[in-house]
Length: 451
Image (tube, rainbow, N blue to C red; front, side, top):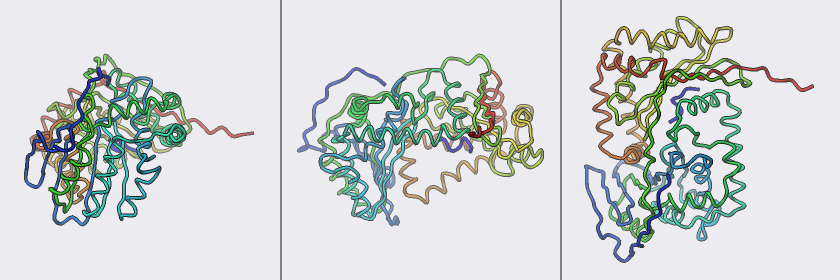
């Protein structure tokens, strides 16, 4: 397991008037940028349309600023549990009918929750997108949330937590490291929630969270494919336009206190091999240093020719797996990770020190131009290859919208391209230091045999 696999608000209530659906286009702002069309409805709903005449299928995505950062202490896990309940029906469409309707139309649907947002999507033939528009508008406003279904789904999520985290030793280490590294910002709790909070979540908690966050002015729709933008926009205005605004949702204005020394923790769990995860405090995309940190991760761990792989796995033969990872694409400051699993019979201390040694080499001497260019190419290629996927194109539009500005996408690529070897060395010296590090150690324990 590598950390690359891991890609959150209370305000005074405000009163808003219900917009009259007879005048759905009043005060709409529109813009066109190539094939990308944007419209903001009077109730604040943002809609993007991406036309691709060659796409065989169409995509509908709706994103809400309702990730785990929007929760609070004692109520963690609301966002993810609500995602499950969004498939439990409305008065118009009963339990499980949403997915059945999409499936009968030849489509697929699913959803996902992250720290920063939650999203729902369908892939359909272009002439079936009206189903997505009707169904998503219905469940934005009319979710039933039956008490028995709520309790049953809560049990499902609790079991999911047991399987994905409590029975996975490395995932437990990751959770512990995150909650130890962050003291204030809401990344410190897991998206799935703490088990003790899940046990206490009520139907009222979920319904209040739903009514507050699932509102037009807290949502963004992306439609993509060989679409008729005009007719689809008319349909969206008709279905979503009469839904009233909610209160304005803002990300918590929270800063992280300065870390004054290394933090170290240990997890004792039934496991095959020892594992170490080191996390360094790092900025997000709003800080220019983030671009060089992305490249640094690529230099250290960008395939079998990268420094960590060659040293720990090929040459020293002390690690079964080893990795460096970092993502700047979050609403709050991030973490830069180093992690490794030892080979049987090898000492974890030796593996941990070998990870640090590769960082120290870069601090002493910057990486070569070739290493840096390779890492930059890999970062850009991962996005460019994704352009073959209509779903990914829509996802990129939405992700940068959730971060706050479509222009961030251009800033991101421009920033990556400008990174120099000296920049990589500079960020290694600035951020990958012992006093800003949190280290988690997995200590395997033997399975107790039953007598």
